[in-house]
Image (cartoon, rainbow, N blue to C red; front, side):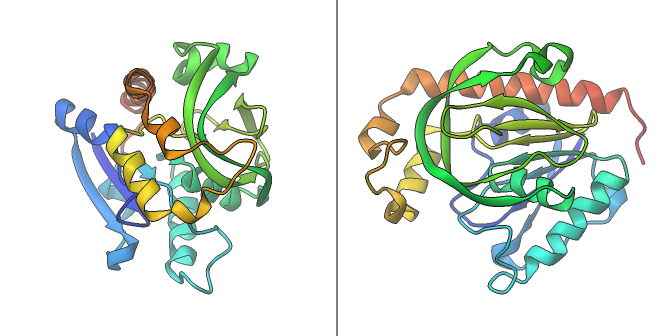
Length: 237
């Protein structure tokens, strides 16, 4: 499988997904917008992974590449490609599909319980996950479900935590790919966001969960495995 990754900042990478890609011998290419890398052609990939970042989807004036990225995501979806968006990536997908992205009532940073919706029972990508589990979060904005999308998960602080748009477009507001090392990078680079709040944990609380990282990474692998199956069942251009 040919995987192309859209990366916005150097300190938010693939995390545990990188190991899975290596283990499965999938090909991997990048557009690193912080390095002004070019975008690929539609025929050059099977799966697009859109990563997180501290910017907003509305920050085109500061990050001009957001305009091209949105068009690329829209074209990928129109061409029937599989697209997985994580955090900012999910917000970008919602935006290009007509959803609204805006400041959430609460910042959600740390480990908080995810509840899957009943709709996940009919969605193979989510069906093997537990109905309730602790996931890692780091976001201040949220999104409305774009027209035609189905909510797959929610938390107390944020209603729309995951969605499916058709069988091949997945948005995850939370971070199942997070590792202890990647969370350290977020703490180092985004420490100004760690102000007292109802849903904001301290760095110590975030890092003292070695088993938690193992469990969420296993769930990320489950989702990626289902994505592989859906791609193998569909057309390839």
